[in-house]
Length: 118
Image 1 (cartoon, helix red, strand yellow):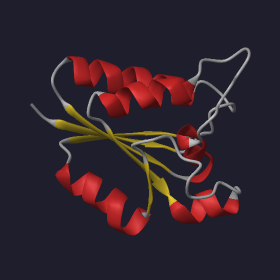
Image 2 (image 1 turned 180 degrees about the horizontal axis):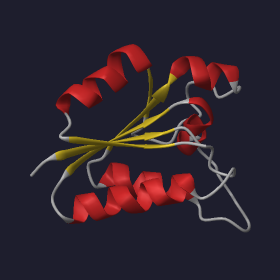
Image 3 (image 1 turned 90 degrees about the vertical axis):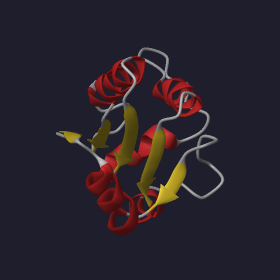
Image 4 (image 1 turned 90 degrees about the horizontal axis):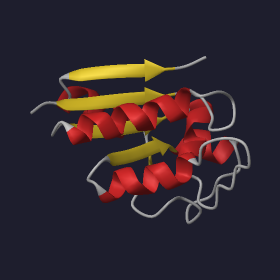
């Protein structure tokens, strides 16, 4: 099977892009593909522990499930710092990494890449 990278640049409460990303990731895992998700810009909010949306899907819970199923989830450290997300506030199993090292590795290891952005 192949590897899919999902590059998400929208925040969890901005629109439904992150919900689409987690559903796409789950479908790819269901079919036996490896999945890598990289959050950039507002997309880094998908790894924030303690999400408790009232009228939106809980992307944090979905990310936890994806990680448990083997998805690799990493976000940009510069973007997290800019948004006040500190190390230790990320969902267990996710990584605060770098666009240079992690996203470039994800792209080089993937057969397909999807970017969701506004």
